[in-house]
Length: 139
Image (cartoon, rainbow, N blue to C red):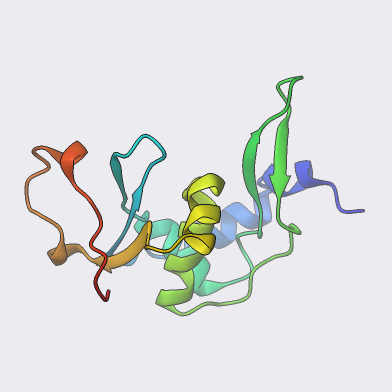
């Protein structure tokens, strides 16, 4: 069985690969409604998205929560990810960074709780962001 701890260890080879990848501007944001009815906006890191697009640097792994002993509970097979398109990279960031409870209710609910949108679609100011709600219309 694959040991999840190995995926979290960044060896010198991985550091060399990531150092060769140049950050790419990311024009998309991941917006999701939290369980407390607030809205969060995830701005994917340009270097991380560039590493996903280059492929064979990042592993399919995320931490869901900590168990009673304080040890992380992992999800994913730990395999190195192949090169991705920009859309696939943003979707992977959403899988990794949006809480599992939000993803589950998004998949089983009757309205969207996660939206991937262009950064220009969001308000320029973040005033009253806790009052934001996701639209029920087409996205």
